[in-house]
Image 1 (cartoon, helix red, strand yellow):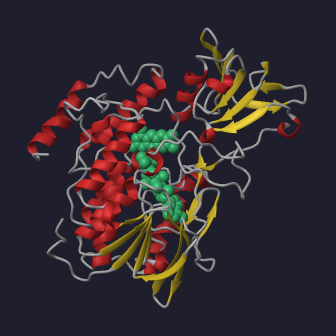
Image 2: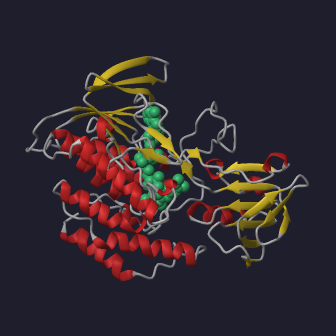
Length: 445
Ligand code: FAD
């Protein structure tokens, strides 16, 4: 892969993480003529998509001293959006025709996503940039540069100076658990979806699954195959919600309280005696290696301050974050964000002054508040993701993201909500699939 011809100023850049965001960031940084070292604490690339049957010692993930297992992928996981819209824009995620070891389904298993990312890393010679089994333990600004302290599997610790650090460490590892009233004296088992792998341990149990979006929907349907009963608690539903979804699966409104006698009381008034609660309640941002002398903070899942969810104004462009906004298009968002970071670092594109960036950050907080959204929604882009990506694309002079991608994501989520059992295998929007493949053909991909 040849570096870009239009390079203005080559930088030495540390990328933290070799998941989807770190891989694409490294490729874009290299394309712009920067030199890149990727630090990765695992033994292979792929991040979250490296399935491990291992779980953490504290199933709720509350013990700060617990050894960390990075991935939150469960054995039965298939993608929750169609494969075409997941792939990077010049490396489509299409079935490998004729390779029987691969999963050709439109919503393939986690193994196929890992294989795609590993193909991508090989194709663009990114593996050579990775220092495997090397954990970044400290990142701090020093005289206009960045000191990165890392520790390898042999316990050897090293300090290196970089012009810039791009944080691609993921944010689906630190469980978000809001404890239920009375839970301290409730006698049952509790586990966060981060530590859920297979349904076997829930055989013949009565289980409450809290949360009814991507993970909650999948995990409740996985467990219900072996459990006696599964009860989904959904905050998004009306307080009187109580529906039987199948023989042994119910959906309720949220939980009112947990009681010492082992029962769970729902807001709808129903009382169920429960063996295990599974929290599918999302994740928290955490960057334990980052030392910014108090400039940056995380409060109620707002990483503050970040211009366009990427650059902390006073520390930009030396420090940047890829992939913070969750949901919607992910890999393509990482790609567009990375192109911008790479173009800024090489000097081809300039950022506004720190003051102007800070004004923008504060204005975005005001807008969020005026719309009635809580702080924890700061990095949820929802319907504005398309505008966000278009804006960045224009800023760094790359084409806007194809419209069919967002349309596929929206149809995918619609399916998840209306047909959770079968949406992956009953795709109706063939026009969008055709459009995707026509697009790949036009671009000769
Ligand atoms: P990760 O994949 O988590 O990679 C981060 C990497 O950084 C890891 O390899 C980790 O080992 C490394 N790392 C972390 N800290 C350090 C450190 N200090 N030093 C060195 N290395 C470090 N998205 C989709 O597009 N489609 C889906 O179907 C989909 N399904 C999902 C299902 C689940 C259960 C979850 C939790 C998420 C899902 N997502 C999905 C979102 C998914 O997280 C992103 O698509 C994407 O894979 C995240 O990539 P990442 O590189 O940002 O983070």
